[in-house]
Image 1: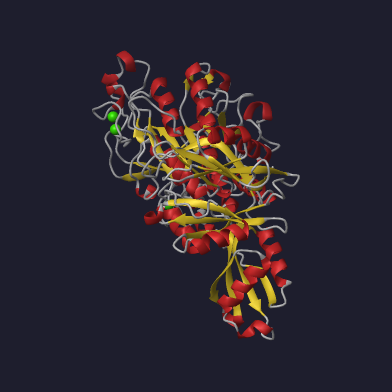
Image 2: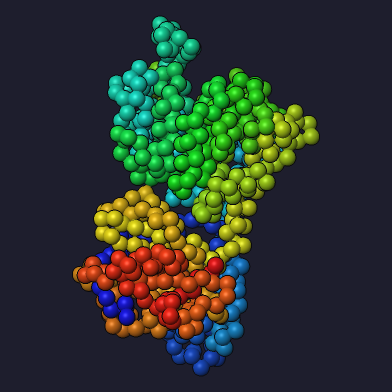
Length: 635
Ligand SMILES: [Ca+2]
Ligand SMILES: [Ca+2]
Ligand SMILES: [Ca+2]
């Protein structure tokens, strides 16, 4: 049996491990989902034969008899009890669990502990001037989306732009980022590439309009990256400055634009780095971006370097949306890059009335429109009010500006995708694109926009977020388990928990874990046919590892033989067990192999060929029947 073998701990995840130990996985998933439930309210019958037991003991009995992972949290008024579920589940699932528990003779009633929300109305200073956030035909209805989520700090949005100023309304939101500008005269910060993406200013004096800069126009610093970042994710409901679309996501500033713009070589490398791909001479990005915003462009067809990097970025798996401004030339976007590149979300700009903004590019390559303001209007709802900097050349104090351009339409989409990923972190890029286009608001009858000119419609953040949440709740009982490998330790590890996956992807571990590309699906809510798969943490002095045991028999045996093992979760997954080594229909066999080394490790997989390769390397197959099957996963 594998249960008494010592193994090394495959990873150090202080945050995740801690929350697993104390509260089950519910606390580990930093996804704000208004429609998800982690607790129940249970009232036991005063007349029951178990009434003499303490509430915690009655909850334990109820967990035993029902098969659900339940933990007593605290007593409530009127003798009701707050009871924690093992996992965050959709409200409908919680209702089913509650209904099942209510059938227990000891239970008077059981119900989901739902969260109620005020209709969030941000109190920021300029909120009322940010009409594009409103639920109007030309607005993005973010105000309604915030009743579902205001975002997750686990989501990373890269802003490839002029760099960033540490504006007070971005406090706590900025990741370190990188300055990807290699050419000194463009960089304007005295050096080439460096780890500081601060925006030193991109002003151009008339005397500088010569040589490489002869096609540029003299002007003051734009602080463009700070404004774009502010549209996506200003600190919100903090009473000052502006309201962002996502209130929690992290902004990853990648500086690619300096004086007179930026070079493709830097922008392409910026995309690669933001997505988590290797860039020669640049340290790896520890926090790859789920969304990449590029409010930049120029005249050309889509260059091969962009096509390559966009495909590679999506293939790498973290990045789900690469969003680009369509451009401000009142021309077909087909001639403007990178918005015209395959896989890039090309965003046109509409007015508050739902008209195509008079500067906006258009055409059949536009995916979607979003409000982008109009140029040269005085302060008012028609502009995009965004945070900025008061410096005309070098940085000055924090400020705001009234702006217009497709540069500000694109971040509306980026911020919305961040909200979508907060409620549905596993959405694929295809799903994100499909949701955004199918939920877009139709162009008003009076609009000069058609789907041939302005894309599928006007961004509807509310409908998109609700659709994203719906995708989660229609398939709640099966999650993707991701396998990681650590080449230093030669260890494997599996998890489905979003926070753990993000930590591992981000490299927040002493040694690097990478995805193997393998995995399987797992149930997380108990069904009559399933058995819990427990997750033990083996303390450092005993091996420092994780072990996943199948069913109550193996889990109990493991705990009995190894009292120092920490039972992180009695039901990390819910799987079916094989009968005489045969899995039921609708499931696939999971194989388990043991490394058979002092630095013990287990690997779990569905691929028999991979299993046999591991066995050929000296690993030992464990399981039932002639095929040695350990458990059965949803197919
Ligand atoms: Ca530099
Ligand atoms: Ca720099
Ligand atoms: Ca604010």
